Image (spheres, rainbow, N blue to C red):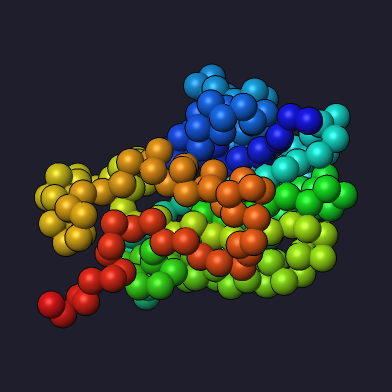
Length: 239
């Protein structure tokens, strides 16, 4: 039976790379995003906003004809570069709604299509869940909470044969990494401070997602967080 993957944030850098990789491996891929249908290469594209419960519920309702979902990739996210004391409640709520609440809702709505034959859920968190920087408090908080949600979900869904893990990317060459015209110097600095001497290609993150999605390659892994950061966390910042 054909394996089905549902990927949120499918029009973004990591999302589109995951769509391409899963399809190249013979998966039937459903992409969910609020934008990007015209450039999507998924087998099916559903327009939905993960922060909008009614929109996301309708998206998953439209997938009932598939009969099952083998993996859910909760990838939809937005970044933020605002000092904590300057962050408004609306900005805080938006980043939590997309980065955290969206993963919770997608998991809940995907569950009926996963519970009978098991599967995998991969939450795309961030290295910022473990160590962060100035000006990204909301983003870091949302990604840290997503790791906690991953562990809790893994415990609750194990009885149904559903594994839940997280991928924690470091700096990745996607539009999310670019901001406010300081891109060249900032990215040069990131490269210099990363032990592998570069930022990741989105396809490298997609490979980690595929590994945790595959029921043969990672069949006894659940509740875990896989760092894909070029060694950034391993490096002592004071050295």
